[in-house]
Length: 51
Image (tube, rainbow, N blue to C red):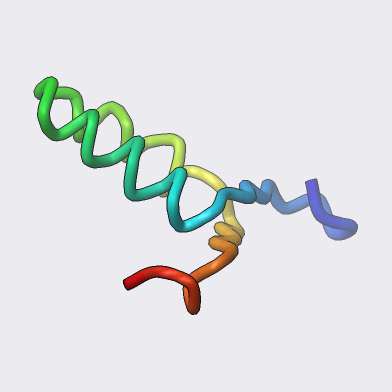
């Protein structure tokens, strides 16, 4: 939760890509996306470290 009451979610780029890739392979991509599109703020760390 942020100071103004907004929901926030923090993840690394590696975790995000891994989770969504796995969900896509198992036919659960739409359900997996919910945890990333629901919060008001989505913070993705380590973007510069991905190839």
